[in-house]
Length: 425
Image (cartoon, rainbow, N blue to C red; front, side):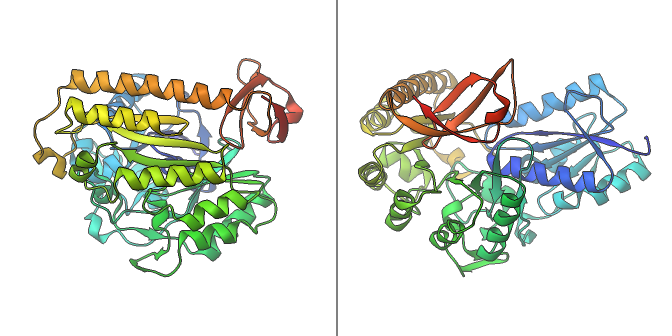
């Protein structure tokens, strides 16, 4: 390999993964690596994986094959949730050189250095039992896009029957408010205008690096961040409805910095299915949260996660979900087709829903989402809202988002890049 080695990254999955990939990239750049695009030739390729769905697993294997065809002499490193859950499976993929589990991904520079010296034929696996994963490593994205994803919490103590995240990321643990505020101040000094707060179970913020009882809470975090000078906008990436308190909603409604935009996982509009999923709320609580938000902030955008085709979901259960979502004043849906995950309780639930039915239900809710977003956007016609435009130009165009998450696309103007502009909808 050349003296100045190059590295390329690809991220699968959530905003949290994007924040961690950006941190890994900075770590390797500090070690002298040159960062390249994933479609360029590089000495090392790092894939930060997700394992929420079977598609994420398949995409990881597809990416490795692409690298092998394009650059068979390059090193391939796999990290992230898939790497923690199934390290041996990944190590068996032809072309993979190094697998880093949850405890080792932030030691990536050390492991790549050893890999370059040893250059063995078999993939090296550096992993451990997830119960041994403690501590918290702060991460944030930077220079990847105008908005910065700031990780403030990791892991999850919930045990939803469909989810592998607790097995992939360990117990709930958090940064401290003081350290998060310090990161926000540094980002403000670097010219960042908007921070998106990210985590696995964001509303559970406050447990120290070793888990255990809450030393602080999410309400305390948002009130502290609101006072940081230089950051114009914050967004809360996703928060469980049972952890989205009235105090948090009221605070956002009265804040100039926290945007009128919530993303609240629902997963099902049927209480029976919510019970099978081991969710910690019923649909009535969810409806109450939406009602309070819209009472205090009629202009607020609300995004919803929903899973279709969960085991036992009859046509009647799905109709409950459709009708419930149709009745709610929400703005858009993120629709996930249920996929079987090893070691989850959902595998014991019958009957299994045919894949064709799952896909049809997904299509139905995606159509509903489109109509919801169209209606939400039309409600704001002729209004003026503030738009933060991205720094990047694509085909002569630029895009940005209003405070309440309506996407705006317009011909590129350099003076608008990373600036907040009054925009007539």
